[in-house]
Length: 350
Image (cartoon, rainbow, N blue to C red; front, side, top):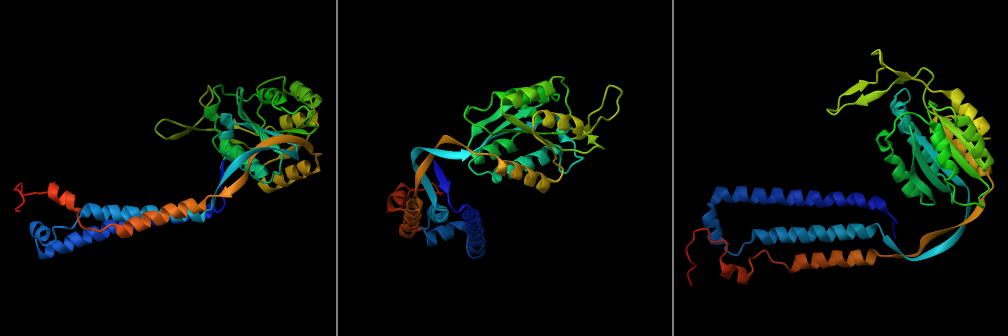
């Protein structure tokens, strides 16, 4: 396992292609100037030992040397030991609605993007709590099991989209049913399920499952995204064009947030309904809930004893720069003897 201490220095890698482009421009400029004084054959006779290949090799060594030195500035570290450590926290599962209605843009940039923003910022502010992610539409799908790897959680979250769930619709009951079996720590006394949705629900037994989840010690909080006025559901065709979903009569479907459904689920789950249209307010409320929760101790494995590895990159960087200094732009003698580039086709005079 590795860590990057100062990733901001990676921006300097943009210098590498800039240097290479500058080299090509200078090479083109030299060729153009040379043509004004003599033709190609005469130039080759005047400087027979000049090697274009060596010029490219030297600039490659310079670029590689600089690249390794820039990477060394980020101070990469390698974890050398896997340890089992004890932490205190709560188990949090996010059930994210990825049905087509979440593509509606009545909340900018869209309901789904707003939901991702909320979950991402909550994860950013978590301490040693464990987090898992479920996505659902017509059925549910375990996107990420319970873990302390918050970076992985955010990465998987960003890739969540309606195409990941084969059956479309909105079945909140599927998400709750999956969540009941999602928590793997029987000793955990505080289990939280955050359902982030527009509240559309096509099933009847959702409230019953919310009661069952509460009996299992799972507190259900619902976060609603969308407006009461609603909005159309955009559909992107193969050619990239955008149309809107229509019903059997040909009328554009308007999807509205169903707050009553979400409020009832939260009530039966002994949690709370939160309007998620204002991101910062939503995050503040959820943080207060988690802050007041009693933390349980659990074990987790992680890499430790990270050691600096920047010296290896400095060494390779200097090595490539030394090779550049030692390389001459003249052709190598044994290559000259081969006469591979004798354009005239006549043997070389001794």
